[in-house]
Amino acid sequence: MAIAEIHVTLKPALLDVQGKTVLRALQQLGHSDVEDVRIGKVIYVKVSDTLAGAALQNELDQMCAQLLANPVIENYNMRLLADPDTSPGTAVTAPAPATQTGVIAPPLNP
Amino acid sequence: MHFGILLFPGTNCERDCLHVVQNVMGHTGRIVWHEETDLSEFDALILPGGFAHGDYLRTGAIARFSPVMNAVTEFALMGKPVLGICNGFQVLCEARLLPGALRRNAGQHFVCKNQWLRVEDNRNIFLQLLNAGDRLYMPIRHGEGSYYVDPETLKKMEANGQVLLRYCDGAGEVSVGANPNGSVTNIAGVMNAQGNVFGLMPHPEAASEAILGSADGLFIFRGMITPLAPTTAATQDSTVTGVGNNMFLASDVSA
Image (cartoon, rainbow over all chains, first blue to last red; front, side, top):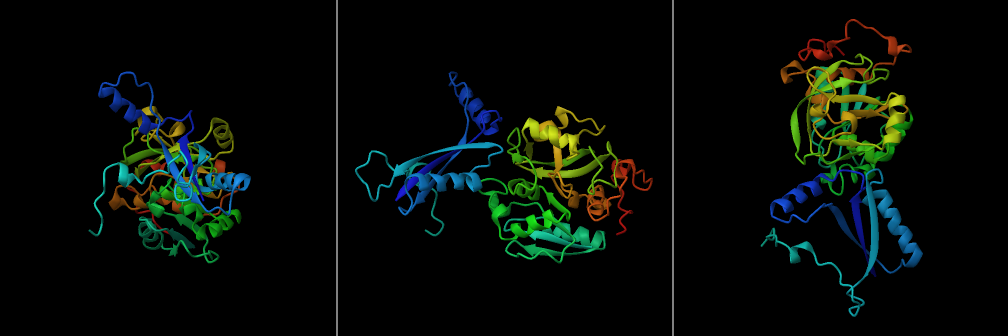
């Protein structure tokens, strides 16, 4: 089993209004060294081990071209992470869900 | 004429469109759930505004793969008229039935206001009842309406008469100040090369009766079901020319 970490970003030539807003906020907070901020998406796709190597790469590229990125305005790149369940010794750790690292959302049905 | 009005989970303007088609124009229409696959009963299609599939990932990105979309593509390839409004425009771009893409508004804000538009080209079914240079008045309400297309494609679209509407001010001036969302060259609506698929961010269905402040949207709905005259570019129909400036034109609503 593998986890693909896919980064989707606006093409460099396009204005990233979210990034610009965050840039201004950082500068207002006194981080005057910040020159630019660009914001993208990170998508984690877990794939069964029926796919590997070039076939896996090909499949992931298709997913990006079909759905995960819009080639008119976005670029994507990816890397494969080892699955912590099957290979606990690897250095790369799988991403923790946002609710574990950031603000914890209240459960819907406590 | 019989209109199909698509309903994705999260679409919210479908009943407004049906109201215009049935009660204002006197035609028939049916709301089509996104899992339907047969559109053969319809003469024209409308993809209404809303937030199809929650706009997750990107606006229109998931809706593009709804079961009905294969039939929409076939419908479009047959040359029948397809109109995408707001979220419908975004879906048509994602489906590659229209060139370009819609980005987050420059300035980040969701924009909700009435907006002037300039007719850029009337040599098409959608705007044939208007003249180039006419102004239309319609609401816009979107967070991702900043149209983008690469400069080379835009040049081809211009030459091909595919840029139909631009944001302008009350005097009809297409200026940076009149651009509500950072759209490339103020573009508000574009058409495909074949001339039968049109997408726009403004809401013509919300500007089709005088009581709503403008009936300018009716020109688009009526145009899309009117056979295109062979000499459209030179058409000077005195009953409909220049009235884009008239916001209170709803008396002219005959089917």
